Image (cartoon, rainbow, N blue to C red; front, side, top):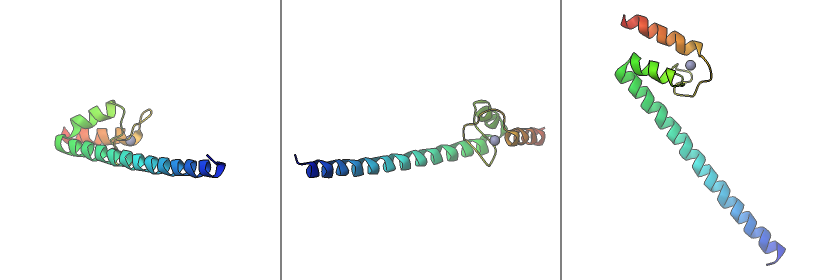
Length: 89
Ligand SMILES: [Zn+2]
């Protein structure tokens, strides 16, 4: 195989890989969106209890970061939980 031919084949492989990774990226983004929607739906249907659970499992329930993984406490989430608890009592 000539160096030119080898280079051409490598470029083709690279292009195919870029396409593949772009497709995977889009799939991942779509799944992330679906997860957020489902969690929002669940929270809306069942009220405070799942929100508390979702939060305690390590996800945000505040609007800004809903369903994203959280590290440490989030003041917005805590305020929301407190407000929801007060509303129910
Ligand atoms: Zn939060």
